Image 1: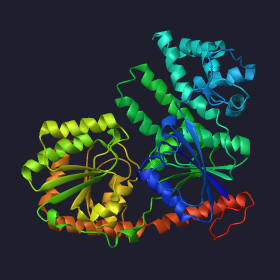
Image 2: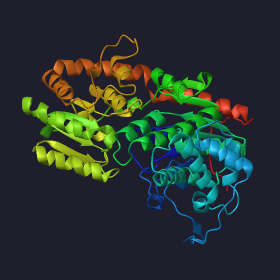
Image 3: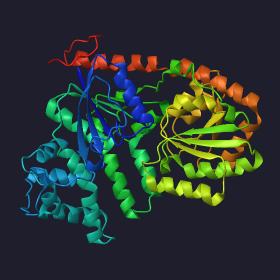
Image 4: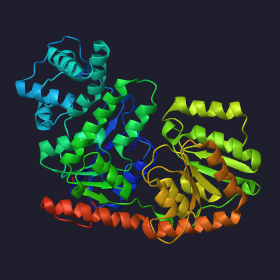
Length: 488
């Protein structure tokens, strides 16, 4: 069986929870041939992988959301011949823009038309008229020229996705909805294959949270962008055979966004617990410190600034505290720079930015870990802390509440839950764990029992093995446990 993993903005270019999950999944099934269909911002990231691809990954295909039109390797000259849509194409594109029920198959076929120019389409009379009609119906209170250019900027990346010549596979496994879900839905149309969607965070809600906080988009335009992500996710839910999520509350969110209940399966994350059995412990330099670990990408969604400010308050009460911010700082260099400046402005000592690390090299040195995210799914960093027998402080987002308190498993609390962006509450949580080593030990052992009971990689592998075998049977494919080998 050939499985095409469709990923947006993560594997194999970025280290993080979802990327690590994809890598583990592929390695868990050496008997399956995988190809990658990756969505990245632009060609500057082309081929810049931070993961060594497993041997059973045979091809990588890239889609660039900020691309331009090329002809024989050169940018296409602006010699426009405006494209005209058929009546059906016009009607369905209007339906899509107006967020009405849409026959996407007509649009899929449109964008596979030979020599179709996205520039010509967006700048042509048909798209202009669609924008005018949408404006008159719903947005006549704003400036039309601004509205028109906003629509063009919204649809440009999606049109690049729709223009992709998708490689053939038996199953398309999208690790989000959004643009990845559009590709997966289009693959079903052209290749008569199956579609599996695995959501870690709920894509639409994450984009909505980002847009609400964003300064680059104002007023009604926020809603226009949010509706765009909703319609893409709804398409993916409608075309998918199976949609997975990590926990019960996420399932309710998916249903609220239009996913049919009968398609949804809850599939918790899993990690290699055995890989944390013989990790290095505290070094000589750690003996007088209380180490707080934060394994994350330094990006706004992780709210590192709140963490830094909370640490500054906590350190005044417990001078031994030392904060290790462990993860890449190059994904959002502007935000990372603001975090560095904040540390300097506040004059805080004992904050270390390590950059990319191997978690197992550092986690055993920590007394507890912390996550101050404003959005999460089921964070692997919490499971890794538990595998090392270390308690956590986490904000009440995603599945963090259930990871800390359990789902009526009788194991007890494994850390402290706080509200998002609450500097005082997060600081007090750090102080409490710092001053109570027996509590840290008790919580850490609760976490270790919880990860061993419910979140092992072996359990996750069995769940996805059953799903993959189900699709293999559907397509009349044999299932072999022998490792996949490339045939000459």
